Image (cartoon, rainbow, N blue to C red; front, top):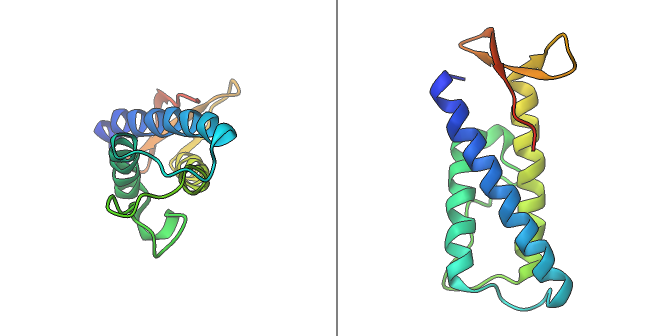
Length: 121
């Protein structure tokens, strides 16, 4: 992990969590409805960014990268995938940080502990 990666990770993580919350609300009302292309475009952007961090080893499903915009998935399908990505991003953070002395976590940069706190969402 490099220092410049931290801001990108935090932005991606925040966007993915916000998307999950939005989709979670939609799934309570109409879980089997297709998601619209506008929302799917942003979900796919967050997934693409997450994939760049997670790589093959931490990506939740080896055969899934992005949703097909021509075959709109249901809201519940999107919720399922986002849920797994949330967990994978959390595991990425745990793998690339260590516990600090005061109950928080600090990023490991270039193999060494840093003084940069992990922002927990």
